Image (cartoon, rainbow, N blue to C red; front, side, top):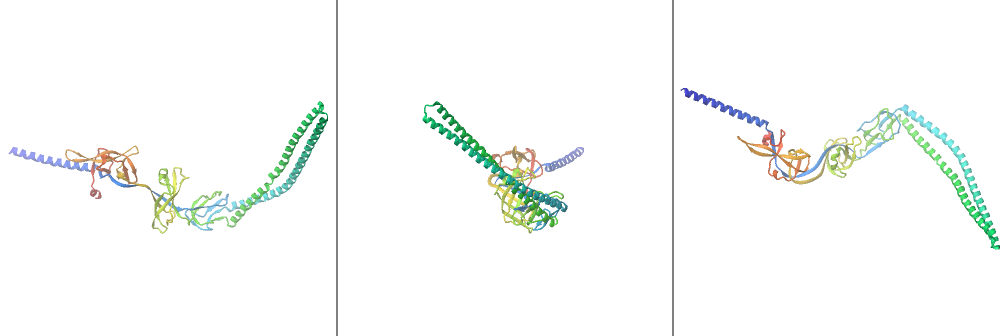
Length: 447
């Protein structure tokens, strides 16, 4: 009886132990199921890989018109803002009237000074012309006298030589006459050399007098040009004064740039830029230098945006028309894309898609399956491994070589180890080579 009771107790203890073992096993598997990374898998497939890029830009107008104003005017108040549509005679800004009055008075003083100087220069010029005429006359007379004097000396030397030669003909053996002829020839040569030197000097003196006249002849014309410039500026200043210092637009468009500050002076550069509303729309996008390879002049693309009525609009005939540096950021570039006749809302955002090339590759997989850096890429494949209680899935690293990729897909070089293999896509945790993973079915993912 006692033995029977002991046996029943052992059976109860064994039963409780088995229950605890089952419970621990269940909890262990449940815990492992929770901590084991969930993955989905894919396989290599043939795909058409499009090398494309998508960027966002701002819609503007293709033609920009500068508005020039009088320089050195003190800005009092700005009357327009960026993006504002302006028409002819729209007030742009006003200037300080006191400063404008000072400018007018200063120009009037300059004009009066120029007039006095012009009169003085006219009198001086008349006197100078008389003096120069006298110099030329004297130089011409001196030249004529020098020519005549030199000719006389040459003529006299020639006559003396002729007389000596005639005398020698009568007394051919006279050594004295022979010596005289030789001396007369030297005298003739000297006279001719002096004649040449005298003529050169006299001619230079005459040309110098004439050139001095030419140098002073243009001073009056320069003074007239300066005076005309002052008159024109004074006229514009007085017209601005009549308008009570308000500068008005002479063209229509949309204000795209304003370089004016209250209290600052205007310059020769255009302080306001206006985009012509009658011109076609363009999309201006900011680019990094790494993106430039997609943006060659004439490259076609598609732009999706919003029309003036607020509806979606798509331009399939968009073309890169200009690529330029960004003056405000040397590390960035700007591209201008012509939108053709598309009805795009001004200053709205547009999304540009440019396809650089497309090619079919036999071994492609989702970009999310790719691991690594430029130093080396790899994927993780699924491998079955048997354990004491079951079979588990293990991640195995396989190196790959990239042929091409875009934002969603990567094409790799043929790899026999990947043929028919399940390639892991991570879902909720980072996975390394040798990690145990749990394959999640599509239905489980949907839940």
